Image (tube, rainbow, N blue to C red; front, side):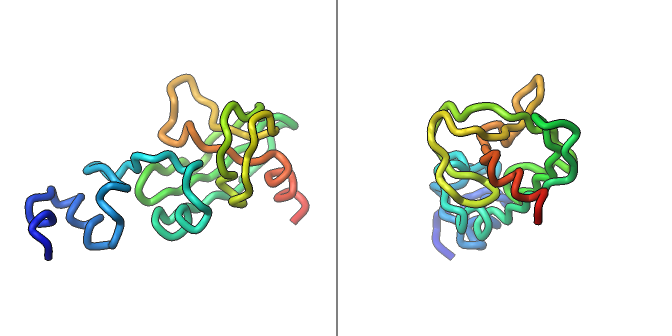
Length: 130
């Protein structure tokens, strides 16, 4: 074990031993760079991300189960359709998201831990068919 791992708190040491670069994760396990900047394989492999559509209460809302082993877990999170304000990556498919694309985003009064995440509307609507 390297000397830097010996002075880390137990959580950081665990992340270090799992092979996650310490510059990718803060001591609390929150990634410093937001998920929309990561590739789909980063999301799935490094963070153990699982996203599934639970229900569509209306044409502009969706209930999503978001499970991220290093960031947050929401069993029934409300997402609303909007337009992307930034470029990024669709959390469900890994496809690029461009400014202005129709996307679903988490909806809450206080910003959830995954507030930066986006799912392309076309991908989410395709989940209904499958």
